[in-house]
Image 1 (tube, rainbow, N blue to C red):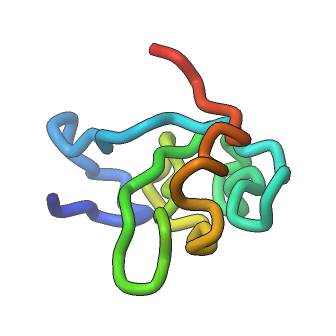
Image 2 (image 1 turned 120 degrees about the vertical axis):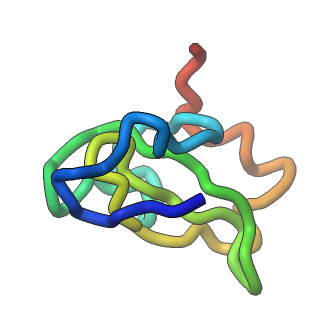
Length: 83
């Protein structure tokens, strides 16, 4: 998936897929977006040593990485947003 991070011309088809989470600062990677102050993020899946990436749902910018310990059973501690 190509994401034009921070670009105003992000295509409508370029929507992030993944569980939505509330960016409530309950973990360092779950702070509100520092670029647009939006409070909903999208988990983008594991990569390398990281459990999940977190991107802003509004501006698509990378917010942070969740630690490996967060992956698995501890995911129930997240503030998942039901669709």
